[in-house]
Amino acid sequence: MLFDTDIFIWAQRGNAGAAKLLNQASLRLISAISWMEFLQGARSAAEFRLSKKFLLDLGFETVPVTEETSHRAMVYIEQFALSHGVTATDALIAATAVELQVPLATSNSKHFKAIPSLELKAFNPR
Image (tube, rainbow, N blue to C red; front, side, top):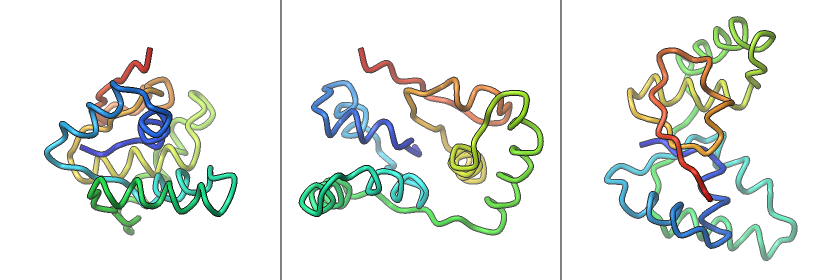
């Protein structure tokens, strides 16, 4: 399963449901985009180190942006940016999941609902 950035944020904030979702996954994938987004959210060098350690300790496989992923994301932007507000980062994350043929776990389903070939694993942090 590929995990959206928000799942890591919820888990790091102590959300038990997010932690359970991460721990129960037999395949733990993170896109390079989510990796960068998560680390970019750090507010200090210490928080940056903790966030990076958090990801490394969970044993995630980082999936790079490939030419195929980039092309698919561009198509998503052409099709859904104006009509549904799909952003470049979300298009890249969605394209990664579709290319790998794995579900995307997210609590932000509305960001991805326009993409018909994407299998979503909706997470409710409440």
